[in-house]
Amino acid sequence: MIDDGDHIAVAVSGGKDSMLMLKALAAFRGFSPQKFTLTAIAVDLGFGADFMPLREFCREIDVDLKIVPTHIGEVIFKERREKNPCALCSKMKRGALVNAAIASGCNKLALGHHADDLIETFLMEMLYNGKLNTFSPVTLLDVKNITVIRPLIYLREKETIYAANRLSIPVIDSLCPADGVTKREEMKELVKSLTRRMPEADERIIHAVMNYMGKK
Image 1: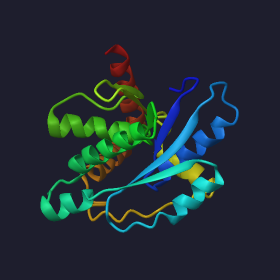
Image 2: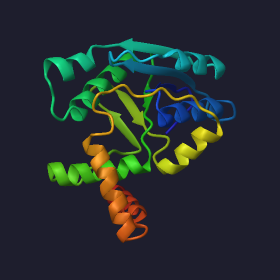
Image 3: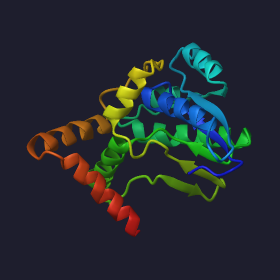
């Protein structure tokens, strides 16, 4: 995922996953055989989030931070009044991240998706869109000439929670009106239900997805 001379934009929302990823990459930077630089990028969706904990965290780990102001929240919830806002929000947020990364001179963009996100995205694509698809550990965006990497892709969510708590990593609460009532939350509940009935069902889905992607 990381090559010598990379300038990596680290997408940070303030949640446990992205904050842990930033902490891990900052630590890895100190002993990695590949020399690389980091810039943290946070997209302000316009919900009034307090980014001070993130600013202080970035100062502690010696990483530059750029906060990108947007009107994404207003567009989605006030102008368009989206019933299922997550897909559009994700697309707009990703565009803002990519543009900010390129403007900062970065050639890679790190996203904090973990293995549970992989499962949930796979199920959403299959059940809602009729496709066998999910995200890859490494993806080249040809149009923008920037590579997206997902350093936490093999970690389970319970492992990121444990690590974030163990390291006392600060977390910024989500102020999104749709938080907790999304299609992704439905998939979380579906996976829990499957795993209660069939132990290790979640692990088998991960292996199946990995095998499928390895053959593509």
